[in-house]
Image (cartoon, rainbow, N blue to C red; front, side, top):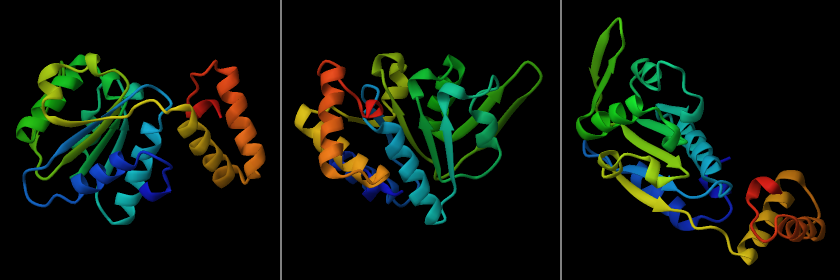
Length: 196
């Protein structure tokens, strides 16, 4: 899937396209913020696939499952053009400050009890997503263009859910729309896309 396959989130997709096409040394880092179930992970995975197909060097990191040594072990492995980090608000405090240094100066640093290493990284764009902006340290937050994803209205939810069920599961539109309505009813008016 590619960005164009993501249903809805038009302004987020438009901004991401601008960001990934920025040329030169001054890169724009982007943070997508919104409650769970608004397709943030999906949009990041589609972006990763699209960039990889364009032969960009991309590293996708799920911050919620990063190893004890943090996200930096994987970034030291190669020269990436894009670091796509999901669940940024779940990063360890050490990783958050390490990411701040990386975003500020392009310096990748890691200190463990046994060793310290650093690497200058050029032309790396960080694209991240998270649920809770208040869990991200303010100095790091200032290094990102923040894109807010608002909860779907019921009409948007029904349209997007119906389209998704038809495309992904080849359901008939009437059945997909019925499922969307029942999901809203079951979730008492506060559903997310994972509920479909």
